Length: 210
Image (cartoon, rainbow, N blue to C red; front, side, top):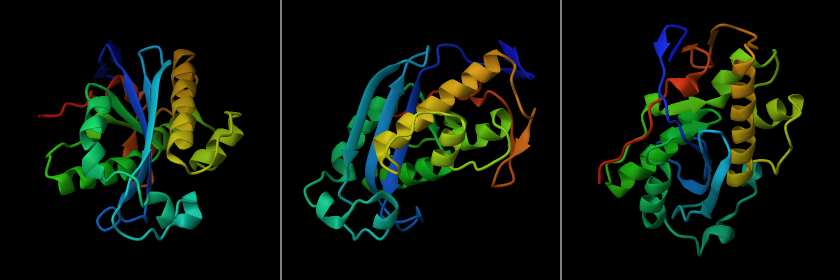
């Protein structure tokens, strides 16, 4: 299949991911919660998975997600759950809102475990970027975007609830694309990169060496 000059990929399944973190800088902060929604080709939920993660350092962003050091004291470390996470992600397209943030944090955690697993940019769909194609002008923040589109309002800034909102956004975009409903043919994202429609049709499933 060809869309906008790009060859698309068939048999697409998705892993919709949200991470909560000790802070906002991937180079020095750590993952403290991961939520994953697995979607089949029809975008139906196959499984939901979530875990807290002990970052082995203090949390400084509790005001964002409400997770505190005491909540994480008995949680597994990332190295304890990394292979289970890999098994969930493998063979699927990675979907997240502001995907470089979640991708960057998970890749940093993989690097710390010396597992050499990597999620690449061509494995990802960013629902924040795609909102610039399929949504009218306004806030691109996850909760505000979901609210103005009338998508169910879940608990704010927790891994699984944010992943659910993100999955709902993906479903909304796919429906818009099926009806040729776009507000722009292309756009520029917050990093100055060009955004094209239907990125989910061009993204490559994640592959991890073992």
